[in-house]
Length: 252
Image (cartoon, rainbow, N blue to C red; front, side, top):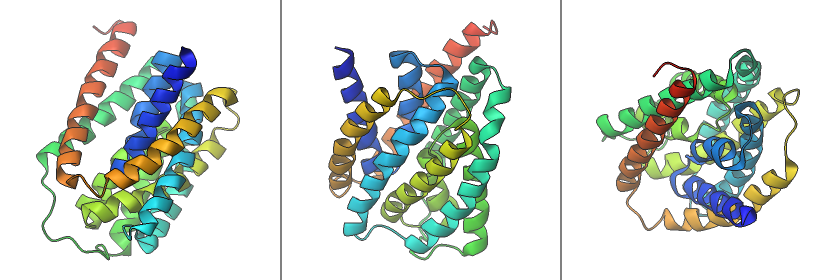
């Protein structure tokens, strides 16, 4: 029964990455903590492995559809990798409940941002220049390493709102950046808690199938509808995580 649950969760994570270019870590870290029973620190490391592998498959599918900007992905991802590696050790200084509260607050802020700020009409397939791309990549990379998130739920809004890419191209481009940031974050967490490789393999195997399905679905569903629906999902999960972990800390 546990294997079936793990496979379903892995498949859902893969679909999220292939379809939205993000959401894998938002699903993976809570799933590993609340369903599988791992500590937040162990879940952070496993999440980076799972999300990184699934992102590469999703990126391959989007490349065949022409929705991937390599130049921006390499600039954004390159500076993000360095920032993620530097920030990876920061999570070790915080208690588990505090780490999950910060994770939830970030989810809440991004979800509200995606709902309240409309997609700009003046999108440019080439973006708004290397400086804005670099700054955005550094910020997302720091958060990736610290919180153990591949960063897709931050990267897609950053590529659309700050860099200026069309939403469909932002989804495909984000998958390369997620894979790069996940690798750097994982290397920074190598000295952390041991990883349950059986769980990782199960999630990755199911997630690869989900990523292929999600990338194909991305051509059929209106991106703006996906963005708003995903934002509401992020907010709902953030509220649950905030309540649960603040209750554990005795704040409420």
